[in-house]
Length: 178
Length: 178
DNA sequence: TATGTCATGTAAATAGTTACATGATTCG
DNA sequence: CGAATCATGTAACTATTTACATGACATA
Image 1: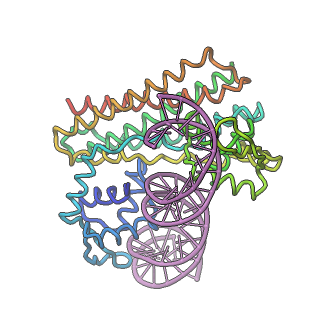
Image 2: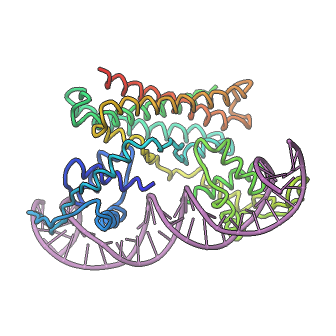
Image 3: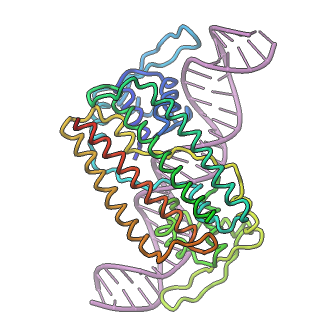
């Protein structure tokens, strides 16, 4: 489906960026719903350049070596908007090794089972705290016309997902202790 | 991480199965947290056989062609239990093209945006209904010692995840209509 | 005889991760 | 000088999907 392509085009539709900038976006903002290493980003940028979806100009940096500043082309923007409005995407259940282990948890030793759940609850609680901190950066709830609207919605989704996961783990613990 | 390997070993630890049986499990029960096509399963079974984790005997079928009935070996069982009790697995945020599009949704036409969310809400509602039907198959809540305990927990997780997603989409719609 | 299910496999392509590799500049 | 950050790239491997390929048996 070449989703990475559209993630990159979407970012470049907002403003020109270098590969390194994109990498950092994938590590921070986008991280809650998409990720990519630099080893995936740089070849994709090359490919998109060859395909005519993006172009670049050399940019001299004050700090560190020179870099390529990528911009989206008209063709790229058209392609991106088509993808964005496409109905095709169906929601596939994400693979989850933790749930797989829960499914098999009957094979665990009784005393390890509770620890297993409590350990994961702790990890998710930490993650939730981290996300809630990010939410505090918003001084107000953005309206649908503001730039930050999308950011806010996906952050909300990440928070609600963590809350739901913690709730589920707690139900599991309850059933284990019953 | 070779998670498919452990998914297969876990299934075979319960009872001997053919590749086709495994395929069907991946399509039904396991589908909420792991999936694999037959084109991935058969080569993995071959590999696991070579590695000595599983063995097979030919099984004559009443209907259709013969098949290979795979069983887990002692070495395979040991390996599986080690994986199950391993602490290493961290929860990585699953990639989600829908959330990616929500992030970029400011670029959509105003009139398309609402439809986009409502369409996805409908899809998730259908999915939730389907999962709730599966829940009805349980005549009672299994205790931690019953075989069905793991099945029940992961089904609960799938249901709660869908509920949370729908709730989130509804919040999005609210903010859009405000 | 055509469709569906049972049953198994390989090939090719895409996607993603981990490791290898280089080089500048800044700060302690 | 060593570590961190900026900056870009390739290579090798693992994982996953889609397509190709075959053949039995059942039933309409």
